[in-house]
Amino acid sequence: QSAQYGTCSVRQMSVMEALEMLDQLVDESDPDVDFPNSFHAYQTAEGIRRAHPDKDWFHLVGLLHDLGKVLALFGEPQ
Image (cartoon, rainbow, N blue to C red; front, side):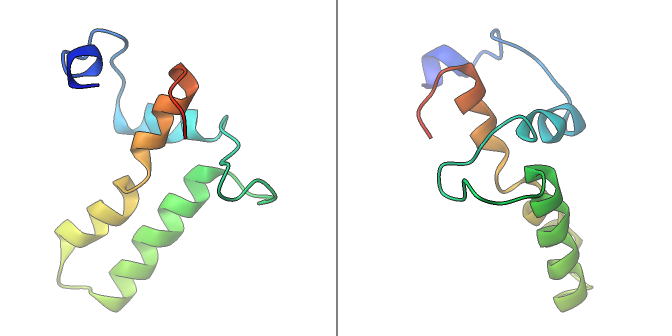
């Protein structure tokens, strides 16, 4: 995986583009969820912000925690 994706030669995108792409994915772990995957990312970040308002790095981790799932849109298993 590192050799294939580590050079970022498949595609480059911003975090916002990756979050938007996640909305195209039906997550195998939650196939019956009716809201976009990006909503889950924002919901997680906001929950962490409320619980830990002094840890801005943690808010960011909450937003980014599922971005790796975008690889499923490039043929990788979930």
